[in-house]
Length: 167
Image (tube, rainbow, N blue to C red; front, top):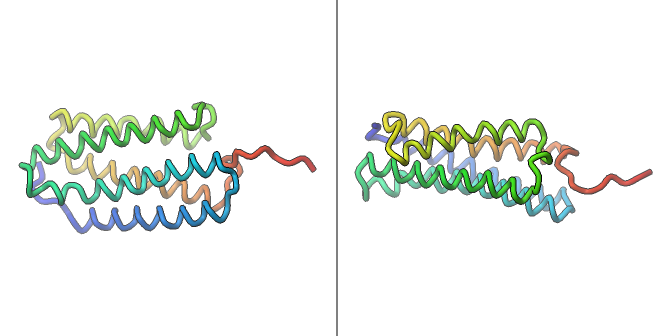
């Protein structure tokens, strides 16, 4: 169980998450006119980015209030539930798992072990790896945001929900 958290790394993750959310928001507004895509994209991206920012700062906020073991159990458990909520929300708003690209489906399926590990720490298992699991979860959310940022930046036609115009 780690007593010392690398606060500088956590703050860097928070900074990256906020920067990604800002850039993505600007690009979404300027590039996509489809309201359904904007709602789904912004919800997913901002949920992941702001979740990464919030959870990157949470251990520092709670470390003075709770014992180390309790703090890791609380933050990992809540983070796991939040991550699970993001996955389910995205899939329900998308209305079909078949609407995912193969990469999106892979990311979604690989998210479940990450969520499971965080929930396991919250339940008192894998406590020796709490910091590493938590850090992986933060990087996972930032990675999802970066992936979506790249997809939007390169204007991937798979993300467009508009029907193609006939010429």
